[in-house]
Image (cartoon, rainbow, N blue to C red; front, side, top):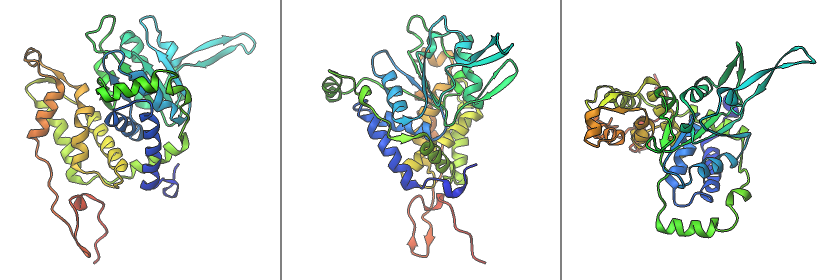
Length: 345
């Protein structure tokens, strides 16, 4: 149990996060928003899905994030012949002990990189469901706890590519956020030729943070204050996806929880101990879009889930916080959203 005295301060959090960010950006040029979202998911105790066309650095981003932290890392190359036991582990009969011995699978690591996750069959993909949600694995009636912190960073090619399987809804819902790396700018691509033209920068990448530091930062993020209007705003956004005429499947209550946790992590990375509606807005597309299923008519109209989320953001009223009067004058925009001191009687 981590006590309050063991928690890292916001100053410590931003300092460690800055080291990790700089380390990853030394490998991934020209994508600061993608790197920041990856850190947000890590500190929010979530899992990240990186989806894009081949060759844009999806696996490079996952490996750079994993190597920047001094923790156990395992990589799983998902293929059509991959078995669930290859991920979770298997019990093998020991002739000398005359008993079954459990051999842990690749999921028993603090950072698990799932490369091209949608190339495995849905049966194999389902082996990740328990570990991603409950952070444990059950084999032959025996439950094994996974190490902490625990994060799955999966890469995925678009479903229209040959030889891929679409991720089941239950699998997508367990990823906190989905990010698309995208093509780099001309300047970033030119810099990439200079940096990656010889030796890969991954070979010289050294850890800049320890696993126990990340645990303290996660505990600090849990303590970020979220005011009732901000919580209600998140609920309204997610609820709007369940009644939108262009969606046949809206976001789940787990999506609301993930959106709130991500907003708290984003606030902490910005040096605040309270979340704002702006934090929720900035993360809504990344957290919600991959969980939504557009209707057939919306697909015919070439409407994407991202466009629907943007439409919901424009229509949903944003809670307005009036400036708070304090002993030193009028507070700022976020004053009313921060933790309030106890009233004096």
